[in-house]
Image 1 (cartoon, rainbow, N blue to C red):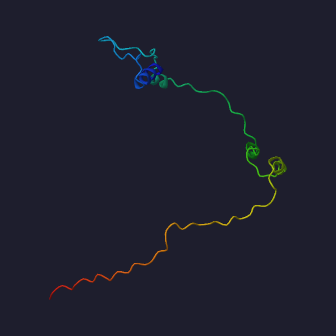
Image 2 (image 1 turned 180 degrees about the horizontal axis):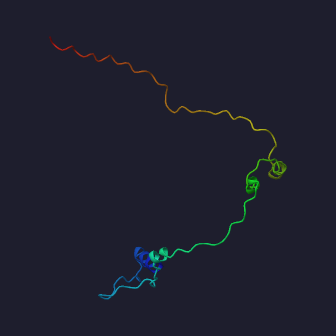
Image 3 (image 1 turned 120 degrees about the horizontal axis):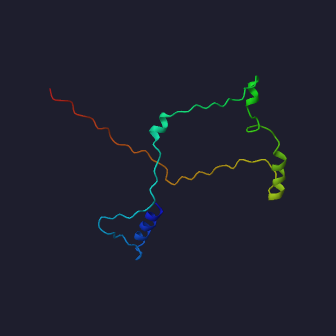
Length: 122
């Protein structure tokens, strides 16, 4: 695929060294031919696996790894030290009141007379 992409890029860049003409009846060989195995034949020859699994422990809670997810306070002292290293005051967060902008003028209700239909003639 790389020779094909290189030729295509040279052609798109309008380079003069791009030769797209080939002799009649011949096609350029862009890559070697790779034969794939006969997958249907291989699928018919199933082989069993004779390995035994390790016995499971009686206490199934030993199978869980608690170190992957946990709630603790081990990293809080390091986070407090970062305030001094970064030169940031260590104070609780405060609420910044939002300031909403109204880009449109105040709306005024538009009043139109009702459209009453005439009753049908008798």
